Amino acid sequence: MKILRAIALALAVLLAILAGGAFYLLGPSSVPERSDYAIDRAALARAALALPGDLPVRVNHVKVAEATMPRAALFSGFDFSPHTMVHGAYQVVYPDGSYALIDAGFGPDVFEQMAARGEAEYDAASFDALTRALPDARVVVITHEHLDHIQGLAEVDDPAAMASRTFVPMAQYQNPATPELLSPALMKALEPVAYTGAHAIAPGMAVLPASGHTPGSQLVYVQMADGPAWLFIGDVAWHMDGIRQLAYRPRLVTDLLLGEDRRAVMAQYRTLNGMLDDPSLRIVSSHDLDQLNALQDEGALGSGLAASPDGK
Image (cartoon, rainbow, N blue to C red; front, side):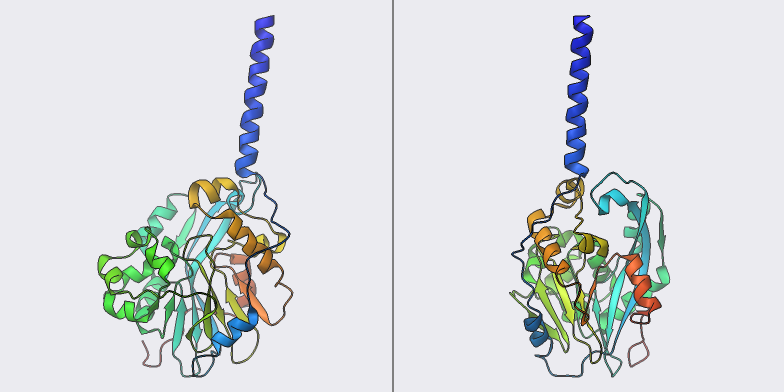
């Protein structure tokens, strides 16, 4: 009987350890009450107006794919029901029909890797349109150096033409993962930019470093000719509910899969949460399908890419 009690006790201890480990990896973490990550809206606006030229008049989104992942990967907890995420790029359109692009999508080979992990749908025609649009953009800016955001640059046939249009911060360029995502020819042709604080990249557009999700993560601010400005936060949060509810990804994802700087990203959550009530600013998460549909339903965001002035 003593042996049975000892075995039962050992099993109870083991289960407690396993439960504690599961809670540590999947359970919630409290976002700090104070943040040391500053977003100076006035400085972003000044930077966005620093370069001469007309301000943008329209923002469009091109959807490259939808793919599911367990909800527990987006929000700490034990809800493993499938959650659909959208993948694509944003087009900032100017009065003359020229445009800038935010992110570059990913090719069909990358999609095959994603599709193996869950349900996914890929739009090859939309990606083809995006790859044709990339080398004609005024500027291409990448929110962060992850495969689904940057790999489309490598699908463009002319690396020199692509490099001349692409704004790459030094932190993205120096990330050891970046050469694995881009071709050697494109890496050689790129001219990375070292910057701090709000930095102008095109009329009406500025960037701000946001290291955390990746070393080279950055926010993209767009000052429109009319209406609210836009703040594209990339993958700081995969869904805006994360910012609204201060519900951060679990350690299993941030520490073991992504290698995020949790402290830095949670500080960004807190700062962005404090900006949600500003009616003059739209904060946009790259993968939030619910937000995408809502913005398109209200007419704030266009669907698909507008053609360049020469009809390409």
